[in-house]
Each structure stands twice: as structure tokens, then as C-alpha cells.
Image 1: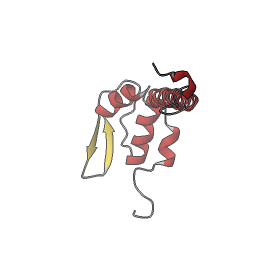
Image 2 (image 1 turned 180 degrees about the vertical axis):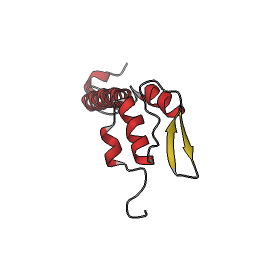
Image 3 (image 1 turned 30 degrees about the horizontal axis):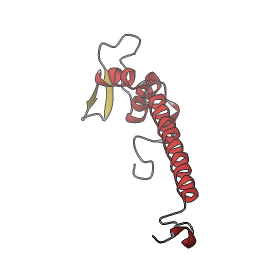
Length: 114
């Protein structure tokens, strides 16, 4: 019977297990970073849309007069019945929703075109 001990241990086949550990650790870190970023984006979106229902409620009570180019509120408690420009209407609706500071940045009508 031949003595196989003289040949030594068999050669290692396949990748180094240490390399697989590094790849797994990197995949775990990337997964954690993606989850953290998704939660951050979801919280930011929720913060932006928190007052949307209040703004849409006020917006639904306004009507636009094509003849005079103004917006009017009909039967809204706390709102006067004076005609509003498109920009002022946008400001009122967005203020009601809690993000009125954006109305000044995003104009209803471009001043260069009017």
C-alpha cells in the first residue's frame, strides 16, 4: 500500500476565506448606508408633505376668474372675499399648508414674461 503522507497536505482550492470576509463586511456596510439614506429621505419627504392636506383643502375652495385674472375664495371662514393675484393666492395656500416661505422663491408668474 502506498504511503500518501509523503505528498503533504493537498493544495488549497478556491478563494481565500479572508477575502470573502472582507467582501461580506463591505456588503454589510453598503447595506447599512443605503438603509440609513432611505430613512433620511423618507423623513424629509414626510416633513415636506406634512401640511399638504391643509393646503389642498384651502386650494379647493378657490376659483379662478378668467375674465379678471384673479382668484376668489367663496365661503372660507377666516378668508376675506377680495380678489387675489395668482401669486398672492399661491402664498395664501402655501402659508396655510405651512410652507409659505417657498412661495416667494417659486413665483406663480415669471416676472420676465409678464
